[in-house]
Picture 1: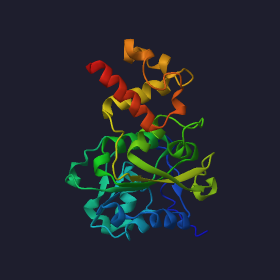
Picture 2: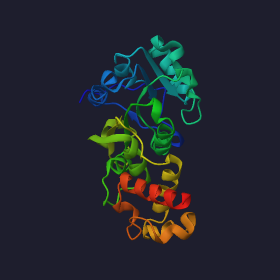
Picture 3: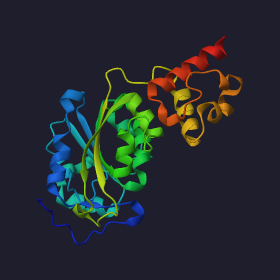
Picture 4: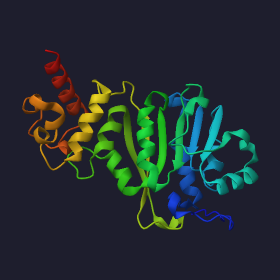
Length: 267
């Protein structure tokens, strides 16, 4: 393990969900898994660079523009000193609330050691902007990473699994133990890769699709006939897979429900 000497002036903040990575070999594996040319993007965003451990390697990726988005002003000042080449591409902002208009509507990839407390929210923003994001590689709490890549029929399978798999091929790349972080988290982490599908989307009304998936998993112990009753009304007993529970269906089957109900309502 190639370990990095951390700057003593910066301590990870619990309320920001910070766990600073210190193992350079993990950084190298993350960066090696990126493929901008294959996925068709020339801009790369790092979310939460912290003290720049991963940034050092991401700066070597062959893209036209690299940006580092950091909320913690202490880290921003540290990065300004230690990575002056970032210049204006170091942005002190919250990715969840920031306007990505500065990317001019062009395709971009995302990488990062994401704070545990906002990792799911990051993915929902990715879904809202899937047309612009062909690839994401990130570090997540292992439970979240496994959930994203889970197949139907597993207890870990959930809302994010279905929604993301409608647009992306999800891959669990490798597990990362707690001791490579400062401070060590109480659980393992996992690195995953999302690559946008050639024909992304559920093949139905995406807004209604999201609504159906969320409603189903919000009452995951019930059959879909019962969990979707409120939003489907009279059609709730007459649609495909109504006797199934949500974790038994893949995104295509959820799309079948949406299309069936939409045709019923239109007739």
